[in-house]
Length: 391
Image (cartoon, rainbow, N blue to C red; front, side, top):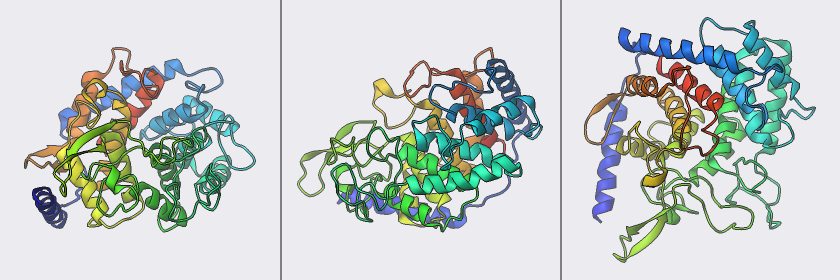
């Protein structure tokens, strides 16, 4: 009962914040503006030094990392498609276009196509890019889980745990990361937010959220408004949802006995929050409110919150990426956390990234999970974050 009252009060306070929140244009102070521009200049110089002869950056996973770098570069006001590094990168991405609209090297099709689509959307007036954008949008929406059968032969209809999601392919199930990149690509490339692809994606995303309205999986997730990774581990464990943060024991409000629930965590919660906003859900939608409450409860730049202590730095720059995109989409310069403190998230992010930048202009993560030991990838993430923080 006490948990329910606390949750109710949290929702009420958040709704009041929604009524008074303003969304002025960002006006960084001179110190943070110059600090960010210095970091950006050093990062671009680093990436210029690491581009391969074929125009790629770290091509092993496909064109996705190249696309992230191109995205990060071309979002700078002084750089356009004629920049020689960008032009070579774009040519590399376009060389990976398939007849069916996919943009990949034969694997990680959704991941590579979605991130490439985001990059190409920055140069949509180029004829080759415009053609690729339309085909990639169709490819992604057709790849989305719907109307096919799952690995057990069960039809994926609207009530299925896979419905609306996107995945790597190799696991035989969708996940939040691939789904948020798909939504990002479709959003960046201008697909109408009322398109069925967004509606389907919201169905999947909502099933990864720890909230009472999640009738299918809500009883297996900590009910704090955050998000887990996937509705199942893989095709061989269809009955077990997955969180990269593991599980935790909480008190059951009905029996007063400890029960195991999946932890929610930062990178996926910001990814879910952002995707709900891109799909044009109302700001007072209970799913949006619950996610914002989680963010207000767990605001930090020191770790990927929600992960166990020995894993807290894993996926840190991916966390920064989803955080910056989500808070920019939210539209407020400041975030009022549960303790009543007001944070200028952009200034905080600039300060943090500046403190972590290597002398050569790059960033990397010693907690090398999800490829964050790769300087090209992590530097692209950081550049995108800085761009979001300065706009």
